[in-house]
Length: 194
Image (cartoon, rainbow, N blue to C red; front, side, top):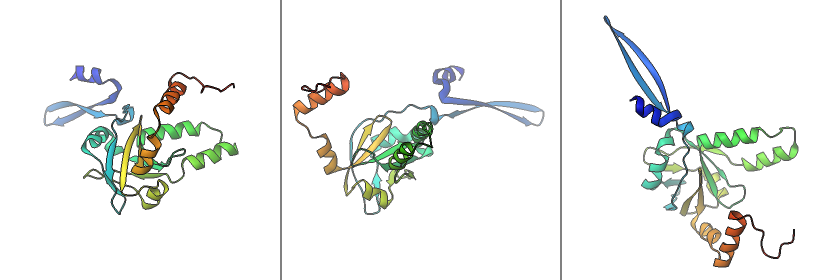
């Protein structure tokens, strides 16, 4: 078992349990997976349906991805920039909040940004059947109807109304090439003299 512990590094916490039974002493090695140290990047785009109560059944492939962090729960909120919802694993949301807490709380602009960024924030869970229950007021913030797309953005998931998602990714080949150049190569659009 020692080799396995070394292989998993800081993902496992090891405890020794000493039990005395009669004249015998037993020592057990106990291991716990540290989900807070996992670095999960989601992948795959999933078409789902939301029912009238705001429940979304997560596809099996996505449930498998969230399985190691399922018990820690999730945080959901309206996206700051897009017309969708953002679903954060609890450990990732805590990291984001730690970063925001570094900002001065005496600067009104910082406070206003944090208020707007965390608007509608709720803690949510995936139930034992694999359903994510999103509160109705949060569903309406994201414009979610019946047809839903769950799309990964690194360590978080975006939940879109299908029509809005399709519109957000619809672009001509030329627009895609220009965007790729700006983002991946740091190039400014042609004609920009700044």
